[in-house]
Amino acid sequence: MMAYSTTDIRNIALVGQAGAGKTLLAENLLAESGAIRARGSLERGTTVCDYDPQEKQLQHSLDASIVHFDAVGRRVNLIDTPGYPDFAGRSLSVLEAVETAAIVVSAVNGVEPVTQRMMEFTRDRGLCRLIIINKSDNRDAHPEQVLADLREIFGRECLPLNLPTDGGRGVVDCFFNPGDARPDFSSVAAAHTEIIDQVVEVDEKLMALYLEQGEDLAPDQLHDAFEQALREGHLTPVCFVSAETGAGVKELLEIFARLMPNPLEGNPPPFLKGEGPDAERVKVEPDPERHVIAHVFKVNIDPF
Image (cartoon, rainbow, N blue to C red; front, side, top):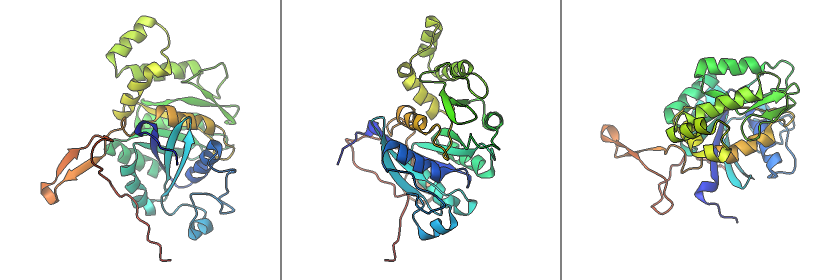
């Protein structure tokens, strides 16, 4: 069994409205990473995450499911959560176990009630956030309007790392290696400049270097400031995918591995010392050399 250092781990929860495509997206990530040979189907009841007989019958998630896979040399622990409000408690409980919340939004339906609730809950918890706009290739999709709505509702810090192209059949990178491909809307150069400007705002030295060089900074130069911007809520990256066709999934794996925080980079989870009204909030920084502190976020009782 391969051992992973703390810096190689990414803990991510897929949250959002029911029907946004979280489970099928998880299936695509598992297949693209090589964790499974082929993706399953909701209709056939063969997805990894919806394994419960009732979930197979209803074709939607009833509880959180935990999977893992390797991507770009990193171990990603991914938690797929139910999206119906009836099961909100089962989704909220997993937020204590991750550093990143990936909020999945349908490019067809746009911002929905659960989208707003999850953005609020994850903000209050201090999680780093990534917004994934799914179904960008659907004939009824309006990804440009959805991105505009996200920025209007949640702030101008919602900035795209990539943009859909060819009617959502692919994505064009706006951060790592911006190319000449033409996106369906906006421009790669404008998106690239916006996200770099947003990141360097949190680091005065980097800002000075950026202005002094008069040219782009490499992703490696931006890494620490990028993580700081995520922690402080100064940046909420947005990316586009199609869980139906797999468009943008490979790019999403790279985003998970290279840009999302490891447990040492994310905001530490809150712990309470004591009980009742006298309990004190304690900040516990992750340290592999110190005693283990564990938080149980999910318990299964199997009658068999």
